[in-house]
Length: 131
Length: 170
Image (cartoon, each protein chain N blue to C red):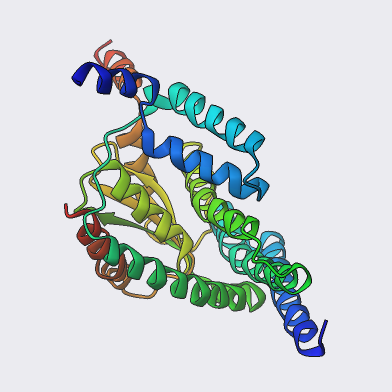
């Protein structure tokens, strides 16, 4: 393996590793649940992307073919990561997880909750009111 | 003739899904050996049969070329988003001013809304949090909201929603 290839692979690995590290630091440092969600969904995609590209370059150079598995991993990651984040945020909103003090438009959580309550629950509430 | 096609659609309710499952299976194992083709075909037949009841009507992609440009626009934004968020995370915490916004949706179907919500989550400082039951509003959590929240709403609507709309032609 030539020096340039080694350099490219190591640079990609370090770059990717840094972003994954930043994602973890974000999980630790950020102050509320919603803000914390941002760190792993973003910083990790690019970090993992760089690591996967490094792996592809390595495979291409060692075995002489482009490995498709990395592309598949990227595809699955891009499909699943946003869904997880969405469901986590949604669950947090419905459980009224605390927001940071300076979060703006907190009232939107309530409107999101009311619209999404299952119909049965609404009926029950109305019945309760009538009683 | 119609009987045959009905029979086929009973065995293969989602032919496109079956084929893509087979291809993904072969890609995962990176072989084209007979055994894996058989196994992949079996998976391609049985998984769609199990998933068929979960199907929702999906609009077709009307402009594939636009979809390709959309992918590249989003990829570029993902890279930018990563770097922006990385600096915010490492920098001083008091600079982060989070907020919630409700984006009015012009899209009407499940798949386009899913695509838009996923894009919003993957791109600069925004995570989609909820879609209202009538599919008219998308609630978004913004990591660092500018003073004028309309900026973020306009950005999402102009940069992503208009493109998704063109792709699905709705």
